[in-house]
Length: 151
Image 1 (spheres, rainbow, N blue to C red):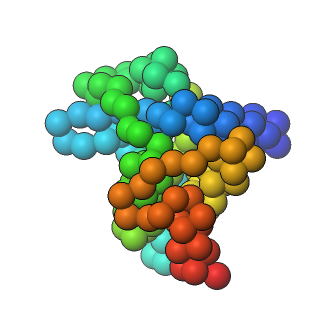
Image 2 (image 1 turned 90 degrees about the horizontal axis):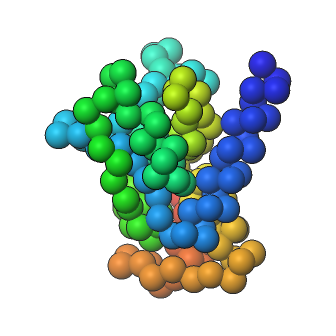
Image 3 (image 1 turned 180 degrees about the horizontal axis):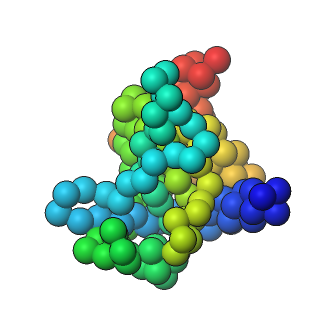
């Protein structure tokens, strides 16, 4: 189990590095919406698993998961800026989790959306990359707003 959690964390860190470089996040979408799963690590106040939407840093990895209950899903691209300011914030408001880099067995890393924003901002800063947002004046403004909510 310990080795598995290290593998999932390493895949998550690769997700952060890759999407920060490419500025593209991939999801699986069908007529009924995006591919969702239930957390194996987090529960709501009633003891039910928290809902989660899954995302990938590579199209091929996302496509490899479009099978079984997700077989009617198509890979779709989301710009990193849209992902951060719309998806992550919206999912935090909806009390959903984000799953990154799930594999064909639906094992992946589970994270809080606002924590993911901070991880992405840290990576973007470390590589000297700025993003254009519609609702924020750059990553520093987004970071301030997220930290205000989480502290």
